[in-house]
Length: 429
Ligand code: PMP
Image 1 (tube, helix red, strand yellow):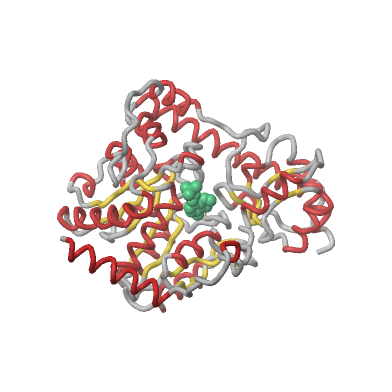
Image 2 (image 1 turned 90 degrees about the horizontal axis):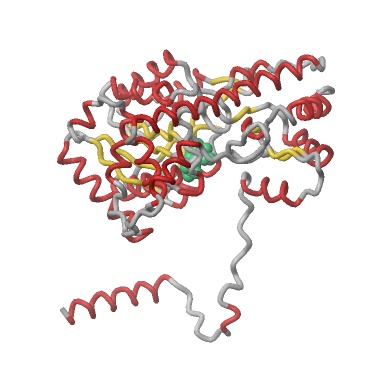
């Protein structure tokens, strides 16, 4: 035992000596002198700038968090009721490494279907994750550990953090065509060509619904074609589903892409998040699942996912998981949740129509059809970085420079102003 401990310590210190510079002669204050400031996050930086602006006209359409028609953050009634029921609980122990079994069970039903045979056959390896980001990262680490020679194909454009996640997990990245700037819609041909030309057995990241940032999703028919091609090429589809319910207002409908792949018998992975559709942003509650060949493989894969989680955060947080399982485990609270998701999705759809109508009434020479054609939280407006800069500096509109408007920040009170100033910066283009 003592020998073993010694060996471990020796090899650890050898590794340390070989790979790290020796700072022995430096004063304490110089330890971090070579650390450069990290680049600002393109999304979170927008909120910082918004908060620093004293103008009463300022509008934040940068960050992807839902706001009500008064521009205020929302706590859903189903969440308030779940919290009331949880209050006073005497359970504050650690969750298991894989998180709340009940929460995971309910979450899988949302993605795979209430009566999914895969759930009945226990073929899904699933763990509670630190929201959608944590699920993506855990999967990326799993991919790196067990398919070390693999790459990940990521759509252009995508949520900027996808690049950070797979970079930090040391998985090389390739991109695939997704968005057509002229039609402001899907580049279906480009996508299919890239899927076809990728080496057999490649990993692809797909947005299950309400693509961020474009708001452009394939049609059901196109998903069927994509799935068939994936099957022929033996690719692995990893679905990031951060907005289930936000596209159509109906979570089951929004899982259609996933269900099509499942019908085709494909072994997929899924990241799920309750940040948006339950408004549990700060609770960091989500789920990573991997569909396996059989129960035995699912048990093995789950054990490895837990093994990855253990040295990172040991086990996931309790409170958000309790909220989710209380809501989804109670038919009344679940139906209240479904109503509230629809209210959020419908408000966004309504704002899309008003924004487009307002721009057309102002006599804009440009087409704004894409504003209502795109779905989910975001409108990929087609505004150039220079036009966005003008919107910010002259009119106090805060958004990412890629022209992404978070429709969740648009309200009855600011949509007229927003249309006016967008018209102002685009009328000569
Ligand atoms: N994937 C996509 C596409 C997203 O837009 C987001 C949130 N902006 C996430 C994952 C992760 O969100 P969270 O970690 O808050 O669940």
